[in-house]
Length: 303
Image (cartoon, rainbow, N blue to C red; front, side, top):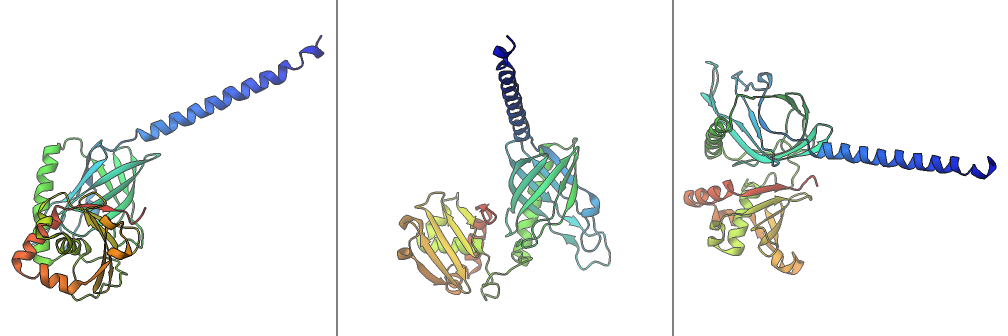
């Protein structure tokens, strides 16, 4: 009698293993779902120990995270508090970008300066009311140092946007007075180019050359930093409306998306000639700089 029912024990084991497996799978799915729901929101202020300028003046920085994955960052302009300083004030900075959850309270932040060339991809970790941002890659073109940031529950969106807009104005004035920021790490072959123009502004000149003067007044221009060295794209969000350009010294080679970026569509220009043609007079510079300040930037260099 007992012999006939020995098959029951293995069957019960299989059922138990199956239930454990399902439970484990459901637990894993629940964990993944929980990680997907991790969000950043509200205002954070950088700890003051990271907020000092070269002359010791305190210049606070702030983050604003939206639940939809967008972020804003600003450092408002401040007057120097050092009587022996070489400067009367420190310009502000304003950045836009995105955030995404990596799970386990880790996040990836991507942002670019609203007007200047600076762009960053950094990691961050949330621990209670503290958000720690890590230094970016040693090979990053623009450097970001590690710091700690703390939640500001009493600061409203309106308060932040008031600071952000003032920082934007100061950021733009900084460029007008001092030119665009130079890369911290610049291994590009065109770093000694006499025209000394940044890739985004060069893209506007290329767009004007290829599509006509009216093309840069249409708005919604997309600028992309590609994965390969000195490789960029600029256009209007569609393949047919996009130009790919690769910088090599004072030369830039442009391929048209309308022709599938084929070599047959390739045209090579002198950067100096483009600058002389479209970025020479003060009115030309003002027009191009205004367009460049509104361009949407996407950094694909680390993808």
